[in-house]
Length: 558
Image 1 (cartoon, rainbow, N blue to C red):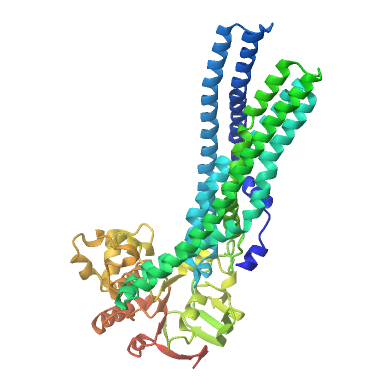
Image 2 (image 1 turned 60 degrees about the horizontal axis):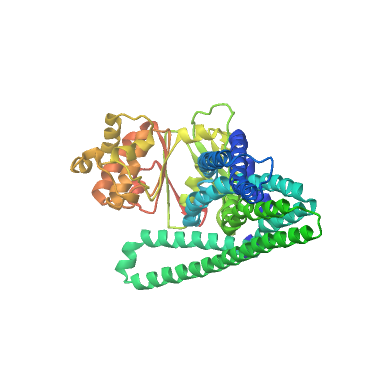
């Protein structure tokens, strides 16, 4: 985490990159700024005009409108203030929620390119935190930061000119007041809490990961009586997060106090300064009253800007986490634009592959002829599953080449590669949907008849028909309502439904009893007449299906 904080980009750079995403919505942003400036000016001059009215009634100042006209103008300004503020907020929130949708789309598009390498053994809870709460926090930036900055600058410049028209040096004091409240104090406070904001977002993501992990391991926690220990760990992490939040709240309180103090000092400073000039005959009583009223009433836009920095630290930290994800370079680049490839066998030639520092495969070669079932037998951890993932091109090899139809898979269109291959993993993921839709993942637009035929081949049809709603029965989250064997057979049904020419099977019967294993192996044998298959298993019985069997031992073949 220390390294991450050292490499943090500056807040102004984060804001610049986030603002860059607004380009498609710039006209609406300009409209929001215009409405916001006009709204603040209406609120400010509502008080200033009332001050003029007081002067007129007390001193019969000439050239001022009648009391009736003044009342009408004040009512109009009050109504306009409400309408303009509503319009500004509507535009800002339209921009914010539109951009959040765009950012989510970008994030999911990036994750599609980064996965599965991105998720292999990674902190999924932290990733979920980025996708959900971090992106959601950007609403503060887009709805309450960009246009308020522009509104505060434009409104303040207008008021500096107006107060300066009362007395030039009074305009200088007003400028100093606006800069202090709207820029100096927020920047000072933001610098103090920048690292703490990032630490809070990271800790929040880690807590999400821990809770997600706890929910997934709930059965094991209950079984081994680890509930109290797990709860104690959650409490400890929550308290740590609470302490971080207290520190951030302290920064917010400090800023609020300083802001209010600065407003009072500059307001009374303006009053004393103008009275001193009045005594020296440099300004009139009208100038004193109007300049003071204008100063006291015109801090609204910069106070709104100042209050933003209370949440801006977390918002910028969230922005950096999102931007860092968007900027990640995929380990594997997708290929397109190449000549279409038809499957005609596969091979691995003298490949080396390592997970970080751990070498899994070394000088490994294998030939998989078209129309054959090749079995790979070996103990767990010998590199069998890794080989299948390399054929799927989840990663690239360190040395050597993986080939399909005599071509290096780096030269094959990614879409063609996915169309040619069906991959059955050891752990089948089921979506929180119907059984039919879970099987239909294997083929877009599959008919119910095709789904049922695939289920029969996978020896799962009879079980499905015993369920209350048959194929329309919903499976629980992560498929928890089904056994491991039932989930595995649904995964095999997906592969049968896809009917790809190259079938990769990673321990396809590991969760099945002998009877169901025999039925599925028989279906595989019949289906493999027109299919090339690589069958990975540590079971000797499973290898009976193969035309040729290779033994794998610590990344080497025999």
